View 1: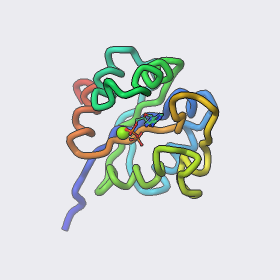
View 2 (view 1 turned 135 degrees about the horizontal axis):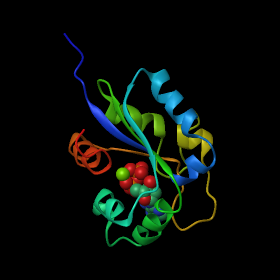
View 3 (view 1 turned 45 degrees about the vertical axis):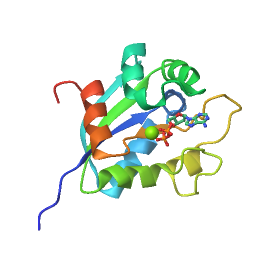
Amino acid sequence: MTEQLERSLVLVKPDGFARGLTGEVLRRIEAKGYRLVALRVLVPGVEELHRHYAEHEGKPFFEPLVEFMMSGPVTAAVIEGQGCIPGFRSLAGTTNPTEAAPGTIRGDLGRDWGTTVQQNIVHGSDSPESAAREIAIWFPGL
Ligand code: DAT
Ligand code: MG
């Protein structure tokens, strides 16, 4: 049996980038055994973010989320390995960093800062369909 290669889109969000946690996030991804396929640092634009977070449009935290994501540089990465979509979600921990389990990125490194939007350090695709859609947004042509 050969490995079923799967790809996921990871973002180190502006809070994680500003705190110098990009290396720590990438270290955990590599330590888990996933490979880096592509990497870039950029300040996201409003159009990319509306596409990326289309599923959340209309929710109360949508506009604050877009504002937060545009507030500074992020690191975008495509990672690869069998099961890396659920695998990275597991490394990241649950959305709310206060509740995220110790041992996870959000549980170890994140907390509530009193902001409208949960600043939780990372994004990871939640399904193969999301991963394909998100990779096309941040890495067109990959
Ligand atoms: P995840 O990033 O765990 O996939 P999500 O896709 O449901 O979570 O939400 C996208 C981001 O929006 C999340 O990382 C932080 C923010 N967010 C989600 N639910 C929120 C809420 N109830 N209040 C504030 N921010 C929220
Ligand atoms: Mg999500």
